[in-house]
Image: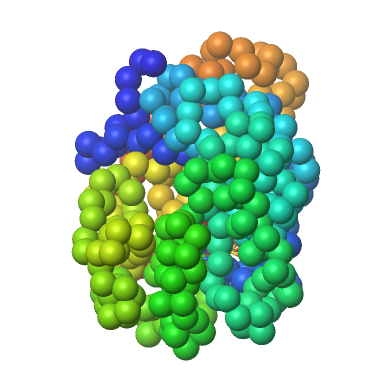
Length: 340
Ligand code: SAM
Ligand code: SF4
């Protein structure tokens, strides 16, 4: 490794999120519209070789220690298990974020290929509500996916729950109890202005303090350490594990952020809320940018240029996303098009 990936505020970047597709088999209301979202062309999407090339440079030259595959829904990308196998040869903590609906059959092959940990999204335990939120009747599949992930020994298995006022905020305690019963951590995520429909407004955000106090009234809690994780963590006083809240709106963790994102079409973004990305494809596909006369893919010189480009993007990272500022500008891409 040459030197760590550090930005202008001294934050060292060790975590890379890779979106493997912008497509999804769900249509969660807070993320995607029912229809009308334009999909990337297949040719625009990075191949596994290209993803591996960026990942290898980030791990071997830039000190990245953890990689999380996401999307869209990563399990709808054909060959995901092969990609996990390739990335598992790197010295990196490999994780997946998924809606869980296909995990019942995929958990074991993914674990065997080298996946270590998984975050599964689950916003409600009520079948009707699940269908309203995701526009799919798949609650049973997701619950089976969670059980499969636990059963094959992925560790940790965490549940992500986006809390939206008037939609599922009355289920915070039920979902916390669900996690306690299975000995897994539930992390409640504040609703962020990244929905494709543009329906977000501040009044629909249920904040950290409200979430914690609702749980605390039923299952008493005490604060735990936060470290580089985005989640504010709390331990149950009766010793039955912990719960987290990702307070991106009311108490952002920007000051400790160590994340970098690669979109499915090869844009590098230093922040989830970056309004622009940096296209890495000119370095990954030199033949497309110079009429086929460029050096071979994987050529050492191109790797050097890619490394320099990643460093340049991180060096220019802003201090924070500024959701609460009056001049905040939403990225044109929504969550599923960036990679959550
Ligand atoms: N499809 C996978 C899933 O749902 O877990 C991975 C991609 S999804 C975009 C990643 C995470 O972003 C999920 O936990 C999802 O609930 C969350 N998410 C999506 N839209 C969001 C929003 N507007 N605010 C907060 N979290 C959001
Ligand atoms: Fe798909 Fe995940 Fe977005 Fe839901 S949150 S629509 S599962 S990408």
